[in-house]
Image: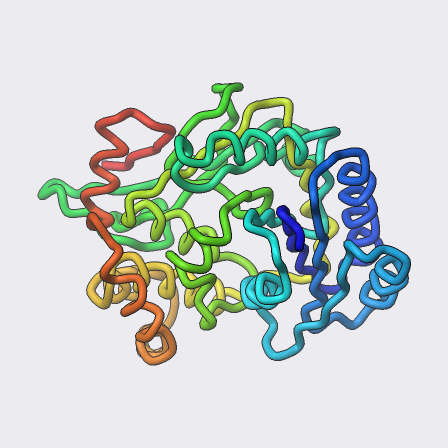
Length: 324
């Protein structure tokens, strides 16, 4: 039974998936960590799955799986979790490579400071091509209206918004922030499975899982933490061989809003998203139907409202952008 499980979903990302898995194996083989790598092909059509199967054959610590039930980055991760054994989980996308010793250093720090961290630990991200290799994290983008009631939307120029933008890392030590990417995230199995119930099944491809993890953990009283530089995740975003689907992107965020704020919060988000009203209302109703059981699982664990949490983040001066 492994202590650290690395979950790697991928969709038609050969040869990057090959480099990612081999890079992880090379680093972990130099450590004394009891580890496993689980790579999940999600509706894959290129030769990536076969290549990962070839890598896995002589290596008992590497598992190659297929998840074809739904095109969903997040459901593929759930499938990987179900086949994992580690008490600590690490998630990395298949178009990413780790800086030397980053994962080993991160695992050591996480296991020694898990109680103090009280939540997740994330690697700083280096977007290698698009943003010239600058180390980045997320900043919360929120709008608090004059009556101090904050509502959710997806357009930073609208008066209704709860999302995030990239910002350059200035604090090089381990520090708390409001939200960040789930690529390069370390989390305990207990927190992700027992407390959150894993990612909602209604999530589709790409985007939205961050909103669920960051904002739901926040209203449950947990923290989002970034690990120290130069322990970084090198992100080659242009190597993705899948693309945005706008309706799926919006629905994913309605899912997240419903999970952390209930029907009212999800409705406000849907009403302020860009798109045809009939389509947005249909997505909202689908989310209520598909996610009601998961919402009831999370609801008793919520300790604050999204509005109250955002106002506290502003008062405490964490990395946050506020439009008024």
